[in-house]
Length: 289
Image (tube, rainbow, N blue to C red):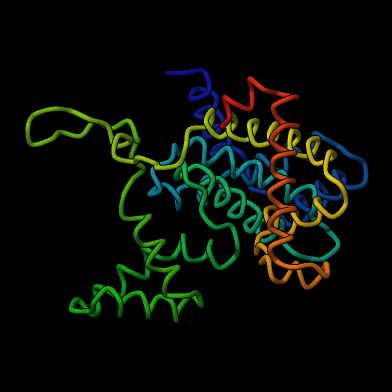
């Protein structure tokens, strides 16, 4: 048995032997802790209410988590309630602490029940912790009910969308499965689940290499464009570097020249660009092309 398990069992034994507190004793301890920071008063107050923690924790034992861990999380909620409790409100500490204990345990269950994080909104929490009970109740009273009808009734009872009910029901119906879990094929060969999750996207190193090449070509082109005059640069940009690509005729109308003249200027500009690129990076340009 591990050290932590021994400590948790000792904590349970101490809790069961702790005396009950009267309302007056409870109020006095709470006042001493709040006003004076008396840790001995806090210890006595919390130890006396560890029975409550254990009782609440056992209500969540069907989620497959160690009961010792549930008790420990409930104890965290108990300490939180002690830090926030106002003894002047004439409310019993156990009534106030129950909410914090349950909330702390619920958060722990949601974080650890599955490796896939579930919803943490109030409606999602309500759905998670009430779905099994409502499903068993409705199925027992109406055994011929279809899944869609069942989801609709649970949706109406809790106030969430039927799609959320269906998704949560699917999650609660099966445990997490490792992607490295082996699968047996008909021919006797073995494979893992992840072998069937093939992505058509390029590998990360390919993406990085392409990005680097794109940046390099962009810098080469930007430098080479400096050899063009104003009219050549405008024609190249609107014809070759624009998403739409202007026509020869439309550019001719803008510049006040014929479309044939635009074609000649464009041809000459492209030759100048090619020469500039070859002069600056002949080896890299040939490789990239």
